[in-house]
Length: 317
Image (cartoon, rainbow, N blue to C red; front, side):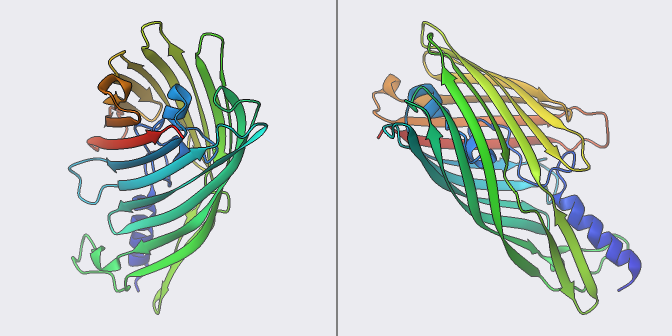
């Protein structure tokens, strides 16, 4: 295979896995709703706000809508906290995630388990947890075409699977006014590895790097049951600038919420949603949200807007 073809394929693979400042793992606009995917020790929003300890959720994200082959992510998750565990309460759950960018993508299945250390996990605790799973990476070479020649690269479609492990630590505490503070650190992909695809004409590798995440926030509870939440999500990966998202969200007493934020990568975001529970006569909680992300960075071409939908269902067991 000519050298320029090898270089082009390598660029396509690296570029398709490269999302805003070399981020290789999936991004989220509504990152607080997907906190347990970012940090295996994190608590769900409904547990921090209402004490509901069993949550099922799903999200769909279309990045850079209107651009062919742009990143697309789907995820489903489940989380459980034993509120009556005493000094060390069980934390468990899992998720399935599928991320596709053009001709490359990955699908992962994870379980998570840990413990919440503290006297009453409904009010405060320090949680430690690990996630473990299996990830399948694939490249559909038949969809990769050379710009100048218009033909397909002569490599067959291939896939590889690898084990994956993540680790997280998370602290949260409620004060005397029922306000809630939380903060966590995580490395969702501890192992790191090279994904190598090989045929009779050569081999092509993409290195998967460890990512370090930090998340923090504060819930202010108002006397009318409104909730104001300040939050931030920091992301670091080797050979890329540190990137952070900052968000402000207010949930009205009628359970509608509206939020907005910015990121150091040159993105602005807005979100809106609704929480259905006691306000509509339900014993459980249903949350539905939509997020819109738009790049205003002057660096490089405009990549358009990003749309994200999420829904969750929480039970107090």
